[in-house]
Structures are given as structure tokens and as C-alpha cells.
Image (cartoon, rainbow, N blue to C red; front, side):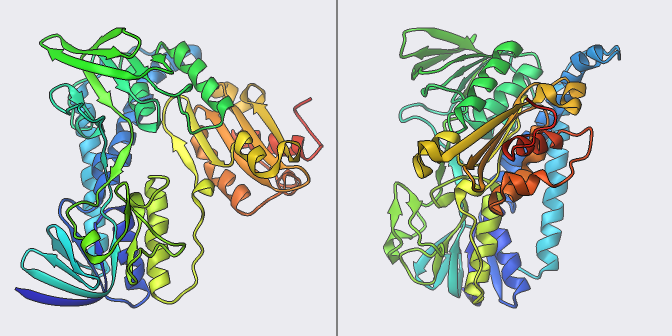
Length: 457
């Protein structure tokens, strides 16, 4: 048995965990990482990176139709699912190797195995006892399922979907949130017949309602089937695939059922409650400094209630390391963290929806303007429709930006600066947006709200 001492030990080597360890080392603290699986966590191995690699392959498949519109005669011979998988795995392997090198360069000690708290200052990993002044919990999340719905055979979550080296001809997707929308979009681009089942009134239910409705129109046009206000009842499997029954009595057949109803926190069996860390439905309760109910024990990333995004996790890790080092960091609230859904069309959003802004500031105190991408030259060249919606407080700052369209996620950088810097439309209207770019759509919306529209009436 070996004993080790550090300023902080991080349980979990995903986005939140390794960000905390790296920043701690930069600030002169000694830091260790405990990881039972692969460094990089869900984002690198079972989430962001492999999903977006496959979505890029899907985008390339879509360019065949786009080429015909633009006068370039293209044909799609086939989609080689094994090569798509190889491309995906190659991207992941390269990023994994790079991350290992980054942690080695920062001289961060890594303990392989499952960590368990034995006191507010000690973690047991196999035969190793790690003592630290601060413990940072960053154990991430897992794909959830409905109670009684077993993930087996062709009933899968995104974990199994990202290991597939074949494309289903028919897919049923349970859940119309980000994960479900992205897989539905990808499989449709590869030629699959797709049906989405969503229990709430709209697809993309967390987005501004105008964005959700535009997405639904786009999905109908693409031939993606969906049913809202529809609940899952049961599923059976046989040699012909899956047979999904809804609460409306309808049965939908498919090769696979993707369960995409969200992700739960990985917090059980770690000794948290035994040392006094309070949990709420599995999530860790924290204060404004991300400290748990036990002094010196912090929680970051997906195990903290709120958005489950890799860039939120990076922020959490950096914030906690700076907090422990005695600095005074600022934590961006979840509402002002940028979000992108990499479907076709893409969705990008930050800040309050129009409805939430009216709840917060009053019905008469909010002004919103929606700029149609039909007026944007670059969007017309790309052949995409959609809009940019800006929500402001009257005579005040922009509090929300909501966008939909091909490649529109690339605008989220400017959008987040506008919202997080409390910019007024009048501030942004003075700036110059290059022509022809999709960024002009943001500029045009700001010009309109500033009372001096150029290409709008």
C-alpha cells in the first residue's frame, strides 16, 4: 500500500477533471487525476468528438444534392459505414494521444482505477491511499434509460450507437433533444428512414419556440418522421428488428431503437454520502463556489445540476482550480453558456428565450426581432434557410440570441460575447461584419433593433 499527498486530487479524467488538474498545476499546486477508464471521458470517447466526426461524414453525403443545385454533378455511390467508423475512431485516437501528452507535459500524476472517498481528505484507489487538501469530484455522466427498458440487443443508447460500423435502414429515436436530433439527422443523411418520438410538444424543447418550429419544418422537408406529445410504451425485438409501441397504440418498426432521453450523474458507490456529501436525485449539491456540503470537497461538470456540455465542464474545472488557489474567478451562469446542436440544420443559442425574458423582465419590457436568412447572401449561396432571433430588454442589453440554419453554429462565438458583455444592439450596430458572411445576419438583426435597418424593412 502506498500513500500520496497532493494539494488536490480529481476523481475523473474527463473534460472537467483534466481542466481542473491542468489549471491547478499552472497555478503552482500539486495535482493528481484518478480515472477508471480512458482519459478524456465521455466527450472524447462516447460523445462530442466521435459524434461530430460522424456528422461530418453525414454532411459530406448531403453535398451530393447540394452539388446538383450549384451546377456540380455529383453522385453518391454508397456510404461505407466501416470507413465512417474508421474515420471516427482515428479522430478519437489522435485526440486521445494528444491529451495523454498534454497531461504528461504538465507533470500530472495519474492513478488508474476507481476512486472512493474514505474521508473528506482521502481517496482510496486500489492499494493507493491519496491524501489531499482538496478533493474535486468530476466523475461525469451515463446514458439514461426508462425504468424497465433494458439496453440490450438493438435497443441502444448513444454509447452503442457510436460503436456501430453499420447504418440502420430504419431507426426509431426516443427523445427529441440534442442527442436524438443529431443521430436522427446523421442517419437520415446516410439514407435511413427515421422516426423520432418526443413526449413534449416540440422537438428541441429547450430552445426558443420559434427555433423549434423551424427545425420541425426542416425535418419534415428532409423526410424525418417525428411524433410529439407521444410517450414510449414498450418494445419487443425479433429477427426483423425492434417493434416500438407508443402510448397512442401505434407500433413503429425499426432496425434499432436509440434511447436518447438524457444523461444521469455517475455518483453512486463512491463513498460520497458516507463522508457527508449531499446528493439530490444523484446530482451533487453545490454552492456558488461549486463546493459541496463538505468543506474542501468540490463537484464539477455533469454531476452538477444544469447543462451537460464539455465547455461548461472546462469552465467548472478552471474555476475550481482558481478558487482553490485563492483567486477570485467568475463563473458564467448556465443560461449564458453557448449551446450548439449539430443537426442539419444546426441550432445555436445563448441566453434567455423570448418567453423566459418576458418572465424575468415583464411582457412589455422585452423586444425581439427575427432576421430571416433569406436576406443573407452567404446563406443563399449555401442553400440554407433559417433565422437569427435576438431578444433584448427595451432600451437595454441583449439577453438572448437564438439561431437556426446550415453552419449557423459558427456564429455562436460572437453571440456569446454580445450576451455575456451585456452589449446593446446599438453597440453592435456600429461594428462592421464582413460581406458576404453569415455573420452579417447578426449585424442586420442588431441594426434593426438599433433603429437603423439596412437590408430589412
